[in-house]
Length: 293
Image (cartoon, rainbow, N blue to C red; front, top):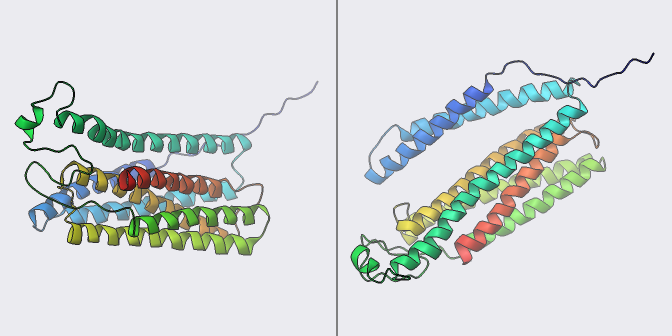
């Protein structure tokens, strides 16, 4: 009589990190909202401090949670089924992120293609704009608000184009880092991964400079009507995702320095690479739709 053997499946213990992450996200959302209000009213408030606290808690959560998962992985607790579960989880996470950005792109589409035409008198709305927005011209980008505020559109040349080139190159360097890992070329892996991180930092720095340029020189702000709202929402949320991707890659880089990952077992590296390539693709779509069209 033969005894059938079953693959082991590790079930982790209860973890405090999900609730810690929820607290961090609450502080970030609540703090960011109040920070914007404080800036619009040009007054001092607690929004900025709460926002910083939220980011600090988020970093604390990431460090603690990543440490637990790394320790479990290096201890050999994960089976092939666990590896498949991680892959499925990361895949669904990226799908949810796609839906997140599709919602914002959908809002932009509705404003540009449908609402703007209605305000311009299309269909049976010949007198709509005379009542809601006299002398309205349905031309994108909308650089004038009903309240009379005028701004300038952000051109696609200059900083946006430079940032696009930077992100595309970062995807290439990350691919070569992955190739180095699979071919056991640790030197290539370290150099290319470090270069990817530096390119990500350069992208974020230039985006901050772009925001300063928009506020100071173009008069493009959050209260600059529909164009200003969608511009900062789309680019801002994308910047947050690039920041998160850079943090994940930083953890992966530290693990590479410690000698972690083999050509056969390196899903943590793959997951980080998937996410980085995803934010790169989102930026290319954003660059074409928001800046160029």
